[in-house]
Length: 146
Image 1 (cartoon, rainbow, N blue to C red):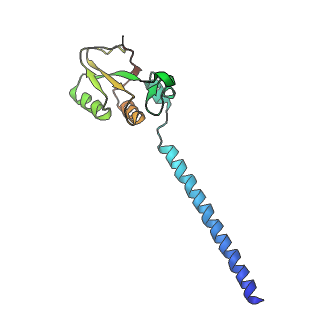
Image 2 (image 1 turned 90 degrees about the vertical axis):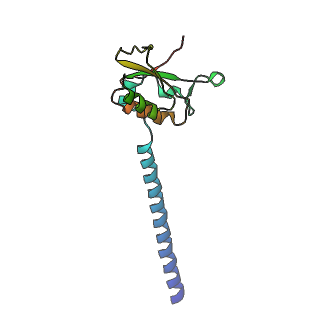
Image 3 (image 1 turned 90 degrees about the horizontal axis):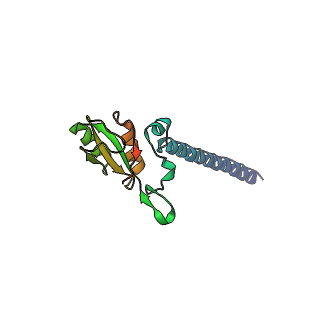
């Protein structure tokens, strides 16, 4: 009788240990998930102030439009007429093209250069976040070609 009582006690202790491990594992998964949410790119009020278009309209590839008519969204913004600013923008956005002679539809001043980029590139959300973080980028608008 004693061995069976001892065996049942071990079984109870083992079950408690395993349920504790499962609880700890579940807690760890929740913490990792929450950390991922905190690290994921999320639209902020600052993004809404700077971006002149809705990120919700873009799919995961950075394309806009109906299923049969998907297209890239081109955007434009102004930067100081400075080669260092242009180099910084081009490092942040591989799709960036500097247009020194055009004010664009956004209306760059004479002491600014127009930059045109596209959402159809890998990690386009991260690219937009890097551009928004630049102190001299005041507004990014969708480009409409005529």
